[in-house]
Length: 155
Image (cartoon, rainbow, N blue to C red; front, side):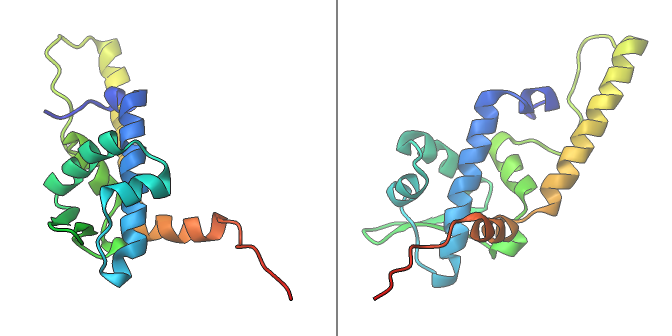
């Protein structure tokens, strides 16, 4: 069942989306090495609750953005290059939100509520455009720019 845009703005959903993006950033950073990351590693790197992260990773796996490798050296990998995965795709994985589908409304719309619905649709289209514009690679590049440089030791 697709969420309405109004539900998108609830705190629980936003934290779930943020956790997904943080996990995807870690997977994007490790993508060139081809080494899978375990949930425990991601949770520690991003200081996320492991149990909640397990649910997020399951949704991302169902959505086809990540795959799992079983075994002692197993973990999770991105299914595509970070530059080919948009933030909108991550959002869709989490809540089955279809950007082209409007929410079904069973109540009778008044002229005033129709005007409000039009504005919400415009907000949704703008949000979708922004999320479609950015990829995991973009987040990784921004991360690199904003991270403070490592400590320098002089002898």
